[in-house]
Length: 158
Image 1 (cartoon, rainbow, N blue to C red):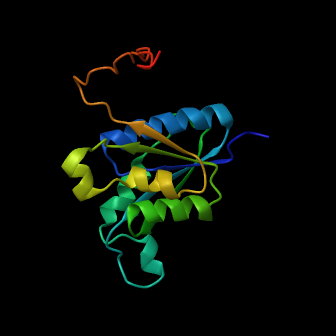
Image 2 (image 1 turned 45 degrees about the vertical axis):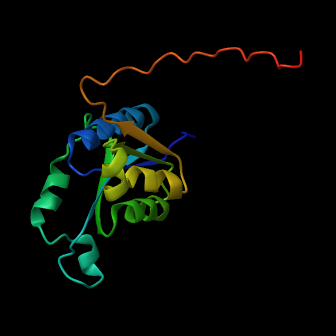
């Protein structure tokens, strides 16, 4: 039995979510899992149950349909749902019994993170399945420094 049966990949049509989608497709290709492409949107077409899966802007559904898998062997399902992205992603993963969520993060920090929040952080904290985050590395970002471990000085009484 494969380790993953269903992988949820939320997309917001940004470059970062495209990188996460490519990673998710590689995982799906290796495991034979089903890929669920998902987008959450703010304003539903109508405020009834049917409107929860129909965005007011029909271009959103068209954008989701335009995403073509890398290989014809990849099983893909597409889903849309209205609501706050973090909450809806966690609900969708639970509702569809996903084994993994693969999503991108824009890597905001400081005041922008405080004001805008982080969907990826919310999902990591609240999802009931493992989450893999694909980070967007800005051009020119320095590589991590090698950690230096300095021995502690002996206590004064020695």
